[in-house]
Length: 189
Picture (cartoon, rainbow, N blue to C red):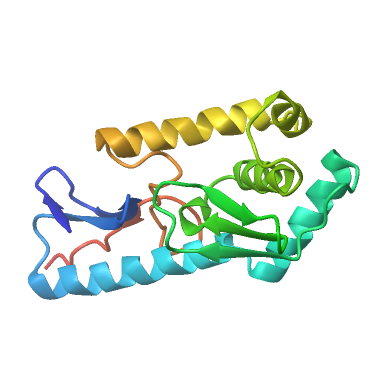
């Protein structure tokens, strides 16, 4: 939680790596601050949940990607989110056809998640990162863009920069859209 003397009427929350940062006006009382922190954490969690497809949805996406870009050469048996991947975006086990995606991808643009899924699908066929591997990965039209996006997120995390655009989420309390929450005006009189 960060108090800001410049912040007057808005409360916002975002993820910064493994931390959650809630920005509040310095003038809030402790009780108001606690209420807003709880509210913003709840909103942030709900937003991430909506953006985080379940395993069945991930499997269907992977099957669709395999059909569309790999001519159906591979059929994964399972795709799921995992919380224990700090240095990888995804991993797979060719022997059982399983794919695991880092939960750090949840909330990133779909085309980035699809790139990681396709990358792991190709690994179910080709275990190394040779030219044949990259030829298959590049069938995905946004492969280079997604790879650059992930490199940028990784670099920002290594440098300890403020949250990237996709990691920073502020929630508007009146509408369920991204934005800053404006505090109600104080009673005058």
